[in-house]
Length: 151
Image (tube, one colour):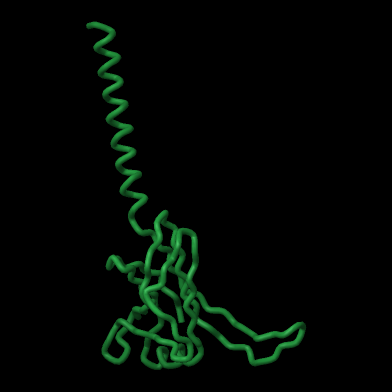
């Protein structure tokens, strides 16, 4: 065999592999990637060194855009492990804070949605719900889930 033919076959194989890899990177970068998590925290309003209010317990849903393109997200919804008032999907809304959805998340940016947790926890526990997870829709209709959060 001619060494020129072997080199051209080798070059063709390498260029095909590189082309396939670049194609994979191209589509992988365009797919939305959101990281959704749920946690609970205590908040105490302070001014200087003095607390000026009562400590409150909050449920926080954090959404981080880990993709390379901006994404628009809708309001976070929740899913429970048992039916609550006949439904597994919950829409826990804060009425004292008004946000306009969809919200734009630039690459690397974080959005936090907080809810007063004490009252929600009591009502869900009474109904037998022990776990919830957050669901976030982007404007392309893709759903992102958090891990289960134990109440």
